[in-house]
Length: 315
Image (cartoon, rainbow, N blue to C red; front, side, top):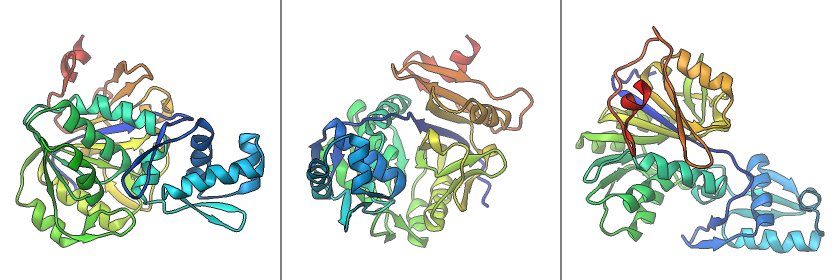
């Protein structure tokens, strides 16, 4: 696995039982009922669920559930199969956006606050990264966002004041991510302040891991062109792992995650020399400093609404 001699920042999302919107394949934002959000959460978690089980979960009739599933199918989030509801694809960015949407948006909003006006950043694919890119475009002026995600680039068309550069490569059809050697060649044309990426797991023994080899390779190529890297993931992935190495814990300086994260995983991160910042449902942050004497890479000052993380740690 490639050792990246940069400082890294990891951003994670809160967990929640509800979200309020779903993004269909046509790019539209559709309002969702609380029952539909519950159904989609269950389908995303399991991948395939019987309609009868969903009716029991929501405590409504099968007829009502079928209407809800029709609505979710019309958004391109699921498909119907002989008494089952099936997630369209684990990599479909629309479905991933809907999962834990409200809390991902809250973390994305907080993380975007660390970016400066006029800054150039790279943003790799992922649902949290998508929302983060939108928040950067919303909160800051004069920013440039470089991405290998066609999905993110398409969504940022709604922000004409933000400059968007889409890196070339082979597009993965479900995730709409550009991968392959051309991504690395394109990335070599840039030097950026921050790179935001995702991860599919973290353990103290394996570090940060991914599910897709080509995407992991692209992340490491992009990381070579960034001063700081921000990894965005749900806290439920901390403690698990994907099949592909992504980044070692020693390459990560800070993790942003929700306040409900497993304390054992927060300890594992800080013992590995990783600073952890937890975000409460109200948006308040708490910093867990890396263990004294742990091996870590230099950490640059990260601007927050109250100053820098270093200033907050010493206060």
